[in-house]
Image (tube, rainbow, N blue to C red; front, side, top):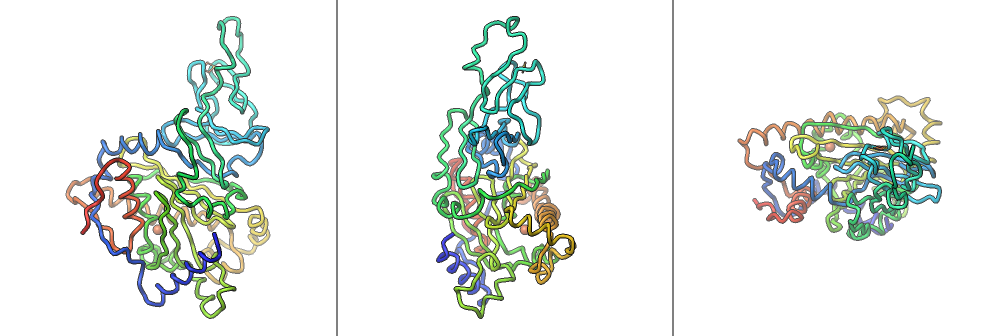
Length: 406
Ligand code: FES
Ligand SMILES: [Fe+2]
């Protein structure tokens, strides 16, 4: 991100903290609870936002070497993603051209070829069909047109994108809606994959997403956890097409108050999320980051699955290994101790469990209220513009009217 923009953001967050005001979008909305429960809407979302829409599946570090592969089954089209000898990222339907069986098992690893477990047809990591046992018995199969079904795949700014439709258009810059330049200045391409957690919860995928849409709850719900590190009730928020940048103050912002702007560290003063339509929250991005991907559980409106991926630069990982011996998990929320060094793994685990045990628990109770049918709408305040934007964007894409203003 350009320094100019960083300074503007930090100034604005200091102003909000000084004046004890949060961002003010000037508008409040009613959001019908049916959007969290309606099976017809859930089917439309699944088809339009997932099965037929480009997906950001991870970072370059998810395929670290030539020969790396990754399988995914999150959005209705089973995928094998590979990095072949030529370094290129490719994506295929994870299905054998013989009888459609999954060729690569779940997970990630190293493989230059994939052998289908059923009858052992074999494919290279460039997708070519390279082996058929007892081919003379099978009959004539033209290998040149029976490779794995290729899907549009692009690696940009350290992010991996796939279109689940073979003839789909994948234009990453246009999907990013003006964020490309900013993301290209981050270190997503240098991030090393450190692990992923899966949260399978009883809440609509949009309710899960909503928990990343305001800082109003930070000092309340997260009082004993993340709230010790962050200030809530303050937000710098900018939309980029269907996406947005969401920045809030870390308590470390205070150390810059009496120092010249040239000494301000954006990284120590702020936390940030980039929301990428329809379902990704990208946290951090210069030294370490989290990729949060939120999926409906198929067409079931009452359930969702969140994948939280953790990454850090090699430099941060190495420094962290050196420090870890003397740092305990409890220190994650101790600001002073944290500045001296903290366990990256512990920090990531706490982040994951905060989402699961604090944010998503709230959403699960909202889901119950919505399913009761007794509460026709929830309300979004003037201080919750990201929620206005998500929901009005989802609605616009599906051809629905915007939410009703209060
Ligand atoms: S289904 Fe894959 S080899 Fe037969
Ligand atoms: Fe939260």
